[in-house]
Length: 241
Image 1 (tube, rainbow, N blue to C red):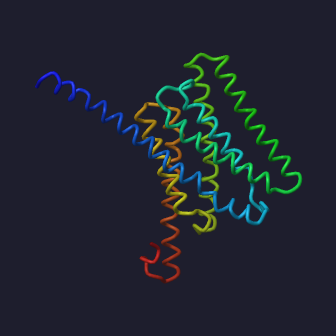
Image 2: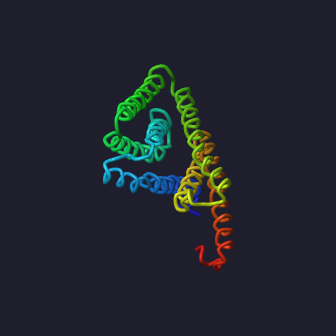
Image 3: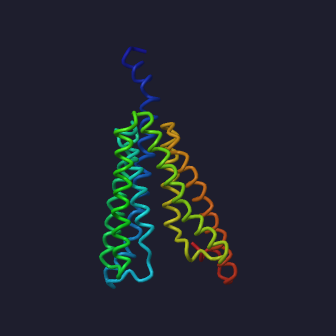
């Protein structure tokens, strides 16, 4: 084996590892994008009817804050080598910001002022996090500080799937758990779980590992209760596909 062949052989594991890591991050970005666009039908309805009806704007406020924190964690000034976390969350922050603005434009009365105050509060909290992490902390401490905030934010977001899981079990119906949304959430979580594991980044793989487990639970419940529904109706099982 000549020197060039040896160099190529030596670089293969590293390049393959890098390719797998990059592919997992890109996959996570793609599946996250599906989640970001999923509220569009709701907002088309809001704009068309010029009313927010009974919809709540709080999930979009919270999602905006979560995206901003996770975006900050992914930037090189906080963490090295996890830029795909920053890209996906910067896109997510833009989507959530647009949703919140549309909600504010069409919500009635005092709720408009409340939502506007919450939006300003989100940017105020984010500005405070950025200031503290940049001005008061060195790089390793900064990464830990923002990392723990992102983990807490992501884990608390999983309260929503838990509520949906509880509702499915209580009603024995998957009516309020759209299959493709659950599938996209699972695929996004497992993609970033793999991405975090390959990078040995605790702050990425822990929350997304929890998301993966919850995604498996949601898909299992969907399969179980949709099959029971079909069996109860007396239709052939193939009708559920």
